[in-house]
Image 1: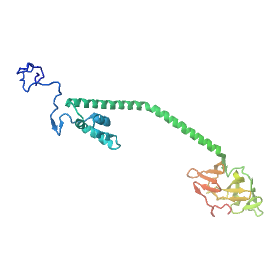
Image 2 (image 1 turned 45 degrees about the horizontal axis):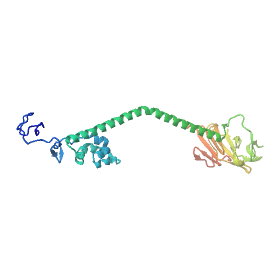
Image 3 (image 1 turned 90 degrees about the vertical axis):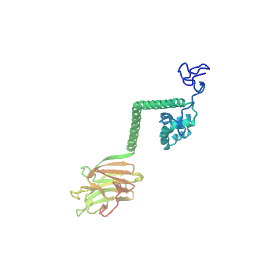
Image 4 (image 1 turned 180 degrees about the vertical axis):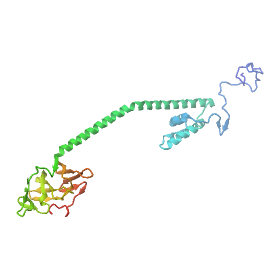
Length: 319
């Protein structure tokens, strides 16, 4: 026989406990059985169950499996998962009490306390690992950036080499130079300048007058560019008679065995510039008020700063 108050062993006929001095009361206590659960006070949830659960919050779906609270697996669902995680933190303990058998409230609290300890411990360990990774990551990032820079430089150098390999010729043009050719041999014949008996000037090709207009006295060849298919592009200048406001304009003569054809005049009025030939494409760069203007001749078409130059009465070199 045991005391119903303190659990001390009593004689079978004792009226009072020799340890606590209280009356035997309700009779013997069986210590082999767990104590009765605490009284329920709120819908079957005893005092001491409700409260925030760090284990459910931090370990969420893992905690849900361990505590048979299957709704907690919604924490794995994108977007709604964050809402479920916080809901588990608030309501997890209550769900765990209802969904799993517990020996007592003490047993329940002990298990939930371990879940919280594991959750906090794992979270702290993850933070420490993240900090350590961040400390050493810059070196790895620098290595990656260095590798990327090396690849970029190599690609840029390869492009430069490819462009250089495609360059047929490059150099400067100057319509005011002293060593400009008086005549030029072309695939269509000799291109020459001559003065007529009346003192007028003309540009001739193979002895035949090519230009005899108002500007003919100021038109002369600068240089020739060899093109594929037996063709040729001759850069011409129109200079000297334009006054101080516009020193020089340019145009091309497109020549083949059958003759020549002029392109429209173009330019910025600057007498000097540079050229690059890549295959059949000829690119001129002439200074202007905005820095520089780019003119490209390709397939017989002149493009100035991205705009096709069309032949009009104002830019026709034969006038």
